[in-house]
Length: 374
Ligand SMILES: C[S@@+](CC[C@H](N)C(=O)[O-])C[C@H]1O[C@@H](n2cnc3c(N)ncnc32)[C@H](O)[C@@H]1O
Image (cartoon, rainbow, N blue to C red):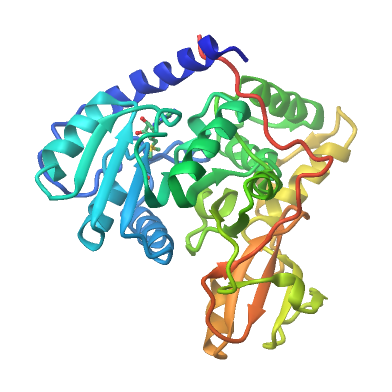
């Protein structure tokens, strides 16, 4: 992809977000304009957005930043929560409307700066303890742009937090959930597969394998601390996205390689270990439905919605974490290479995070290639 095409895509997103942030924004109440589930097409409920925001802010606070560079800060959801606990806050966005609005609402606080900049124009904005890209990188024109941005972010920041990364291994399972809501009537397996291919070819957003971040972190002498979203609601955000921290290796990070690996056998033993392949009840039905659709004869009828209501075994990550913590242990839930499952890193003591939570991408595709908007 040429730089011209990248620039065109970035400016298209700026136009889209200028329109999203048109409200006068005179209050500093959290504004979730534009936050909609791609499964249902509906706005998230207040409880869902509140959980998502609290969880995100807690994850960033855990990195203990004094100086934050927030890239693609939008309506200032994260700014609003973090501002009072840090010394310096620099927020940038490609949307001039967003930046104007954040400056108006928060610009009088000492140590703040709000600038219209694209993510690859941040090299002079450091130093920062944490560079935040929360729910932003799926708008990037491609993986080359993302790599360039990560180069710059790691040169100005100690830790890079990338929140709400869209999961490539779960992409088609997510699409199937959306199809179940929209399907006009009975479909054949061939029609479902054709629909998935078509959606994937038209996809404008960047979707990534967690392993991509393991490779990129290693190239920068950092570790990739990749974790499932902390929330409980069965939303697209909690199920089909993950959070990444690219951080310097320290002895405050737990190395899963130091723990015994135990494959899931239907129950949790509350001892230090890496419990692998835990069925995720919120994900398994869609992953299994996808397997069915992929293996059936093209003319075979498929009841997509019916497949998705099949009950699934397992334990939700938030429940597992709570159970483990009740036993006085620390628990990190991390992506598994088996879609529909996850791993839990369980340890004694208190840690700042985990190292190498995911396998490198290896032979798997690291990312999709977003389509151009017309
Ligand atoms: C979904 S919103 C997230 C806003 C905010 N980070 C949050 O968590 O509430 C995505 C934001 O990213 C911005 N954005 C998209 N592409 C960008 C880029 N290449 N550089 C900087 N900002 C970008 C958009 O303008 C938009 O405000």
